[in-house]
Image (cartoon, rainbow, N blue to C red; front, side, top):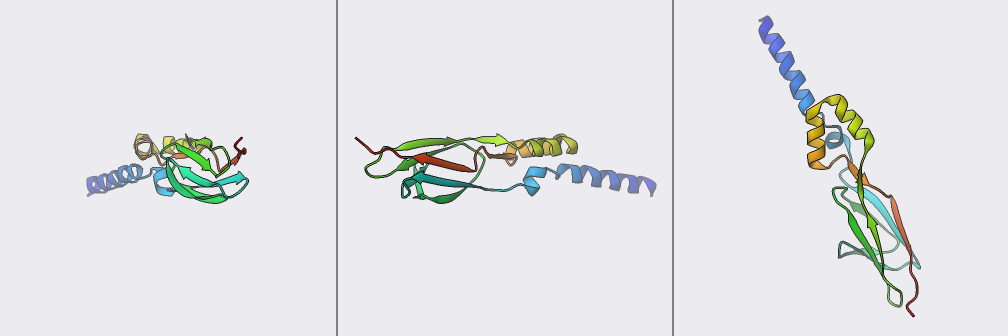
Length: 127
């Protein structure tokens, strides 16, 4: 009887640590990026796909970098890069949880976030 209780408690502890990847459980799946331009009304392309017209707020996953391109007739195109970075808070929490949470959050990329909350560009008129 005692062995069964100890085994059950041990199994419960291992299972709870296995599924305690903090960023995967509690992190955002997408991140808001405010995109603006001067003058407003520029078309916004993200990795080659049109996503809207400035000003616009985009929801992007933080699992990769993005190339933001501004296009407006009569103005030169402008390109900005938005990268990802690892949220240090998630790493600390995962380290406290053990090896499995670190592996899960690293593999899923859920501990990443965008390196900027907003991107702006000043468009210059074409000569």
